[in-house]
Image 1 (tube, helix red, strand yellow):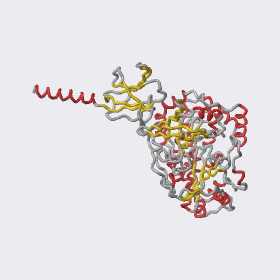
Image 2: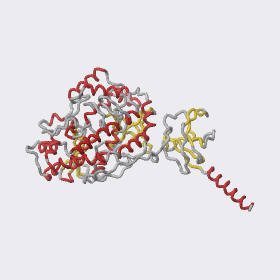
Image 3: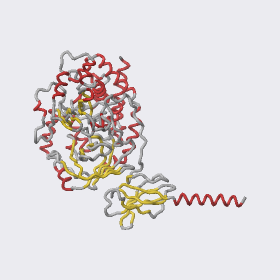
Image 4: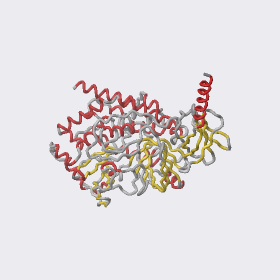
Length: 566
């Protein structure tokens, strides 16, 4: 009996020793560590195990150490002394760690999926890509050309394009690319301390299949969630468009903050979205609707071109990608777009479904316009005749596909009219819902009007699902939001007051804005005086913004009440 007890105890001791001595590889992502070292503290043992710079990139420190029984923390060391340590303990693991970002307590967050309300458009043949992974936040490290970075930020209206190097670090993936192009992007964010950027990785370079990527500043939205939710719904509605995810961004070891990541809707996006990524493709033209792009008849093609030297004006329409066959590009041509505008101006409007479908994918139009109403889009086709693309799909004899984009002024945030104006029980009462707009004339066809109403009804009936997704996304980004809001952004030199005033006057006059709303919008963006918690869960009574959940609840209640009264 004593022998059996001894064997049991001895076996337990051996098993415990094996657990303690089991080594794993630790990897931590850090920045600005030129004069410091990294270590990992295991089970609160005071002496850290030292980590060394990874062979892949200087932004990762890695090393072998025992697996923890209770937990572990990363620590920063200078001259053999610990000067900073994570304030939380990470859960123990017997496997090699992922590339864990220093100071972030969780690597992968469970995010409830939003349902697929409608099947994807028949024209969509999208590649499988990991560029957007729910529940994860990768990091973009951009570096080099410090003089160019200063120049790019010294005059935000000059459209300066510079070369930098990029290292992308995900949880289990690292990619470095030299000599990428980057420039400031967007319009309204150029007057704020945190700009948006466009990245072109260069011919032959791709990140998860994409060459051109947008980093969205999120500065207009104190909840950091509106654009993400809107793009979730683009996918749920089965529409063509970019995905959306989050990333941390550093330039030359300076923190730039939390950004939204989107694909830029230029090639190879077209073949990735409509041809499974294959270049063996006869591609149509991709047009952008930029400014007052109502799709009324175009009488002066020359007026579509932007004037050299304009700092804030945009062309009405642009050709973003010309048609091509197997990579051979054709000359720029607005003729297809002109033909569409002439069709939309016909009187009486054609009532034949087949006639419409010959010109434009009806599902893409009805779903996109219904989505604008559902999310209260202040800056889309209905409200501003902007922020959309039209792709001529040569697989369907040039049939146009409507593609929504840049949906940041949604869910009760805007800059043109009082945000509560977008809360309407009847879609006909949505601000600027002008049935004489060429594309809205589609609702003169009874079958299309019926479908439009059904689209809105189905989306509103599923609104409760969005709340759990909001809570999970907020939990995922909250540590990075705190970090983002703590950054001193002294690298952007904003335009002089005369340039700003000139630009603001142009915006208010040409975009038909309420000056009170626009002033409130600028004030909250420049002064960042709405907390993350309030922006999501609070009741906000301001001209340009409501609480995120506050607006969703009020809007859904108004639509559901209207349905009961019908």
